[in-house]
Length: 346
Ligand code: YSA
Image 1 (tube, protein in one colour):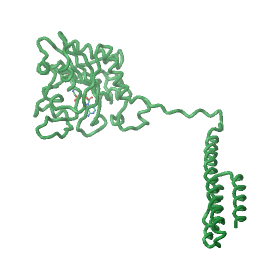
Image 2 (cartoon, helix red, strand yellow; image 1 turned 90 degrees about the vertical axis):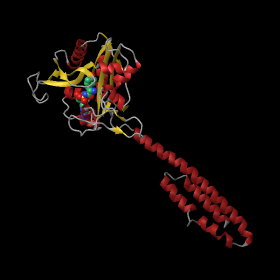
Image 3 (cartoon, rainbow, N blue to C red; image 1 turned 135 degrees about the vertical axis):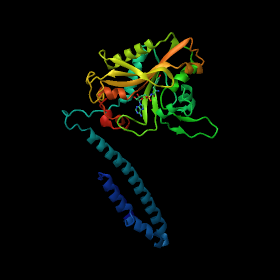
Image 4 (cartoon, protein in one colour; image 1 turned 120 degrees about the vertical axis):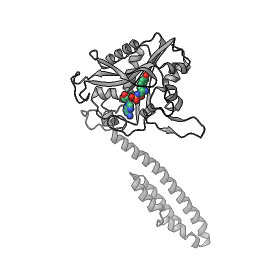
């Protein structure tokens, strides 16, 4: 029996040196260490051997088993490493040096972000600072401080996402415009004030080609002594020409917002038809881009600015409308549906 064990050992170890992959090693394991292997049979029969052989055969068989298991583990590690190197080497083989390299997909800024930056840069060049504010807002800043108390009909202009608060707590909402930042900025600064505020706003509205429930606005506010309506016109005129081109015409018409007096809407002449009327401008020759006005004296009083000393103008524009006009995009929903076919064009 001891002779037999020696034979198994030498045969098994001889074979090991010829194995070339993990599959062959597994077959080797089954042959020499598997349930039906000679070694396992010998180990099973040890108990029935005569006493004088039992000890020596048992010890030799167990030692051989341990030796073969150790060889198995070592060879497995070596063959695994070799297999890994083979895969790596295959991947490194250059098959056709004339093939163009694979392009590395580079991320880029979202068209809205590009537009926010472009517009803010124009106002920074005109002496404005850029500030940001909270999207979850108190009713006070979004409405009341802007002359829109509860039950004021102007609240209908702003379909609102309300936020549940504990009973007795002040009402909160997702801001419906960036105008609440007018109040927050004036509360914490003394004139002169010149800020622009880009940011997301929310409206509880059905979406369509020109309406989203989340979109961007840019607010502007300038307050100082002697600011007049001419300053408002001059600033916005300058802005429109820098953004849309030197030849642009600008039109101001009366509009109503409770927090300004007087209030206006500003339109530019249609860049497609030049004012003669087309589909883009609905045949009017003009495209409205923002609401604006002189800050209402009551709003100034609310933040402890004396309206006899200080006056100011403010404006608010819907941001997506600008790239829509510039690039002829016919559906605002494309901006926020994460479709790379659309986004990667900018
Ligand atoms: C007016 C006077 C000021 O002194 C200062 C600001 C303003 C603007 C005011 N806060 C406001 O929000 N007016 S607005 O309701 O007419 O919206 C302004 C712009 O936001 C619109 O001209 C439009 O371009 C855009 N807008 C409104 N609802 C929208 C939208 N864009 C996309 N989806 C919607 N649902």
